[in-house]
View (cartoon, rainbow, N blue to C red):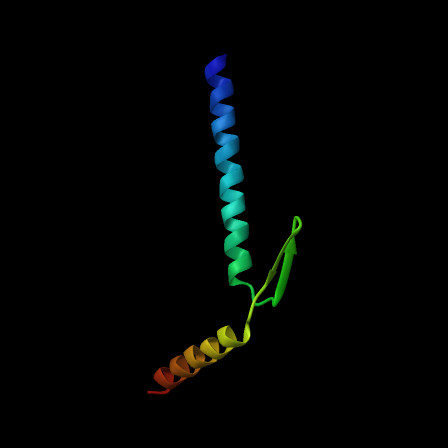
Length: 66
């Protein structure tokens, strides 16, 4: 019975850690300037990211035309 309880807690902790990491990944990939969650507020400079995305888009369009 103790093994079942230990297994449950290991699975629960692993699942919660995976969920937190996935949410952090999604927040990092978002283009939002300000993001607030659970009292934590993040303010990002997204202008530079938009410029990099435009450069990548232009590169891919130029290679598609060749």
